[in-house]
Image (cartoon, rainbow, N blue to C red; front, side, top):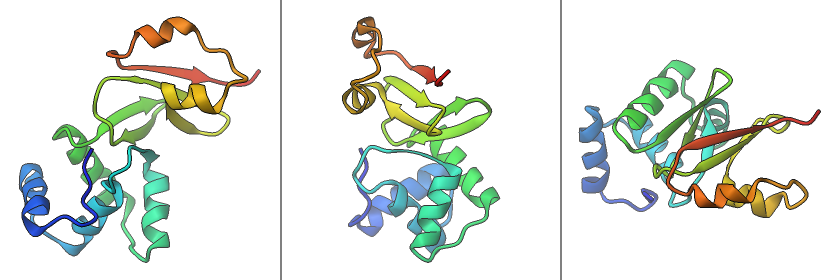
Length: 139
């Protein structure tokens, strides 16, 4: 898990170089917002709002291109659900649960703790090394 909140110039330059990017203030702000040392899931709308709340403005095109580059270089995992992209800072293979009613994606282990009222199949605990998305929707 990357934490770039207090990263030095060399650490940030290394990621920029891996992505084939030149250094800009906007990219550094984006990298620090995404890689704050916490595993998280987000969509382009939520990261755009997060950046806007801190006084940074990005076009959707810029965000989309930068997030896809970070995904293709292995810094983020991109998850496609119903023609919508979500990004995960945890790039290991693991199970996700998508709650349609909340339009939110969770790691299976976190969802299981948060939603004890919803019984999920116990066999999913055996699939720790697989990428899988479970889509939940209330009837």
